[in-house]
Amino acid sequence: CRATLGFSIKQGVVDGTDIGGRRVVMIFDAPKVMTEGNWKLGLYIDNDADDDQFNKLVQVFSGQLGGPMGALAPLVGEIRGVERASIDMTDDGLIHRVVVGESIDFEVQDIVPFGVETGQPVRFNGMFHPVASDLTMAEAKRSRINAFGISYEGKTGLSTSEFSWAA
Image (tube, rainbow, N blue to C red; front, side, top):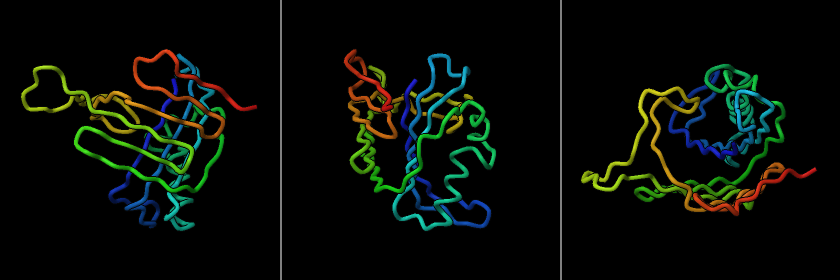
């Protein structure tokens, strides 16, 4: 399983440090059976984070401070890197885009089932997931990832997506 997760933090404080307005992008690769561990992880923290914010965000998203990411920390076999980068996140209705410098550019579209008159996308509510217990389902429209030795591109349904590790 390969995933790229983008976080736009509206408000929050970690050990007295305000992290509101910061952005973080996490990329990881895990085996097909994710509970086997040995995940590869990389983190981008936005350029506008000061040194204290940067350090606190690294601690949170690497699982050092516990919480949901702390529960996943034992599954991480290697942290491939942590870098500052320009992170742009845009939302246009059902379309969401994340761009991290020259390394990551992906777009997803929320899934609205045929016949749903309200136009509301599919949501999973009350589930266990380290990001949130309520998630909106979306389909990858395109992705170009080349970060921390993880490279793939494509979109949902294509068998041409590639994945490779740099030695």
